[in-house]
Length: 132
Image (cartoon, rainbow, N blue to C red; front, side, top):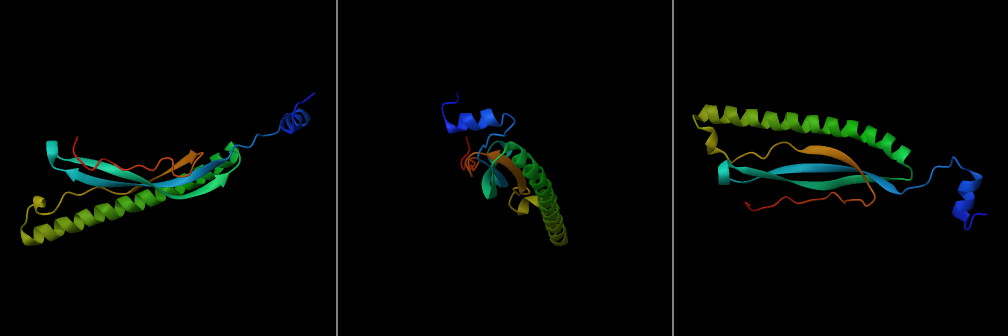
């Protein structure tokens, strides 16, 4: 005899799917140039952009796959814009007869990624702002 309603439910429906509260989250990784030490160093920050609650792992997998396709598209667009900006800066430098070290160091393109997590924002992070 089941001792509580949950056990009774699974006894009555043995193929039932247990609920597991999760979130499918979209993150943005923003790189930054840290400084010139040891030939230059870079870091990155990861920020939660948006999340969607789901109740089953199956639902999380379907939504995550869909958002990963979106994240790849956003990442490709960000890389294209970054490379276009670098090209434009090189053209600007060439037109003035300046060397590349005239401009500040670049950080790199933004990247987007997707996670399944139990707490929204659990992958937020700040890169170190000083040389170690």
